[in-house]
Length: 295
Image (cartoon, rainbow, N blue to C red; front, side, top):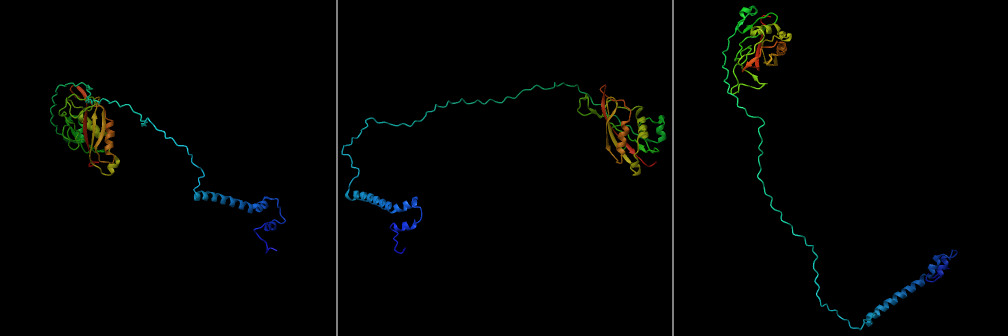
């Protein structure tokens, strides 16, 4: 049955849609498909034939008009200029004159006062010291000059040497020479190393040495370690006679230097040093020799 079926005819379409809904669009499209194809091919062939005939037979589809064309002549020449916005010329700025720097003149903060020349105080001669025993030190008749106390039982403390310009072992010293080139006036806080009238402890230097021998607390650690030698302290005798700025210049450790500081803090006020008729601050150095020989 299907062997003699021609697919180019509508017979195959009937076979395909047998028992199906033929009112659906697919059946109509397939049925009209060959016809539509033939119509399209005919239209394409006709268009090709027309264009081919125009080329072969030189036929113009759009004939040109035979009316003469008039040329328009321009009698006035028009020139297009570039539209450039002209900027106003820049004004030349006058040159800046460089002014020479001026140095500000300031008035001195302090008025310079010419001080009168003060002649330096002449250097006093050093007073030699003789060593005295403890018994001699307790005898006021024999304490005329600076003495040394040696071999004190229970506390071997010795202040020996001279009170003057030289710093000898164990000496309590203070310079009597003025500052070279100084004015002799000095400020309120100036510390002098030499003055016209030296400061003096209550009762004189002999009493001060005895006071040191009686009040110096020999540290027990230093005694156990067998420490001996010279502890050197420095201090300032203020204008009211009090001792300030107490420092240890040479320490033997084991608390020996601190013991000297604690002792001097308990000292009574001295008579202040006098320079140009007024009390001034004076610096002193006090060596204290510790000896365990007679302990």
